[in-house]
Length: 526
Image (cartoon, rainbow, N blue to C red; front, side):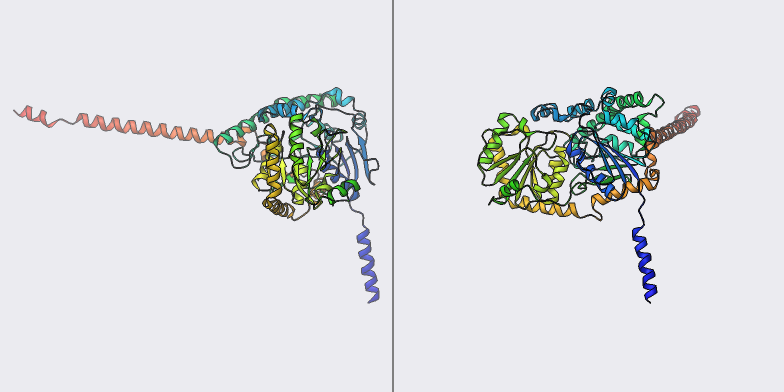
């Protein structure tokens, strides 16, 4: 019995120590936004923790990366114009209409050959002889990053830190009907009236046309200038996407059909909350009535508020008993009342996890919104551009917050909305219910992401996940040939019936005209 036990024990120990398959994974994330990178930062670290060899290129490298994780800085690489270079007021003016947002995003997506060649880290990667098993990259503003898929001849996974964009759905062969799937910048939810559906259709069509004619064309020219004219077209390359991660979840975002190659991983960046810095924790703990947390994200800087808008918030905050923790990027905040604490940067996830946070005032970015919903914190959203309006409207539709229109900000309106959310327990109750739905999943979003990344590598790019729609000509996908055939059959049938009816009618008429009339016979008899 002892011998059998020892054999079983040794066998089990050996199995436990068998090394898992280790892969070499390349991550390229040049877009300079901490919120955009936050999700992939956690995922890449998790892959390294599992024993994979991970190389990451981003503007935010760690000083001491974990084992198996190599990080390269793109901090000095500016590939395109960024929203962070503009004030909130300027951005709000540029995004005055959803159509302007579409045009603005198209112009921001232009990446020049010079900007890539000036980036030392990227240039070194292009000259490298390393081999990789997979490329993971962001596909938000541009797709020129896919040149590394050609360079290293590897399958690739793309991700977007918000809702799926129309051209992403197109390249994945995913049905995306604008009658109930809102365009990113529309600000609509799934239920739309006639005029909203018409507007949504116009935005959907315009964004796809602009992306294909401007962004993809320019990115394709840049890629071929770097890799050579014989490089496969970017139009073809994007359709080879093995998998697409979206930062959405059905409990929060408008529900839409998704093919197996599109995976929702909203909340993947949310880690276990850590202790807060002592000054922030003391400020929150000592507030008898709770704390309002105010942050406009990583791209928008609240210090760029106009004086009028800034004073509106200062007035409202001075009239409430709660303390206010405000992410303010400047050294001083003129007119700050005693219940306000300003910090240039703070650990947002850890702040929102504190039980004394009663309200989150935000621009409605998807990552911050996800963190607030995860912790069941009501939101007062001030959307400026992109998917922010849709995110805030989703929160509003769930009764977990309200929308504050930037152009309507006044002292009275800010105070009214802040007090309504703080004083009505329904907002907090609804936020807690939404949190339960958001958390209720068969697998954590981080584990889901890691599983599918390894799955794509194991199955050599997982081409079986691609639908036939990816390779279909547009006329076949829209059944235009079938519709044309049915129209021809229908019209031909009508034509045949018409001529048969005409022939029969003529035949009957001719026969009746040949019959002698009775009056004529009587006349002859007389």
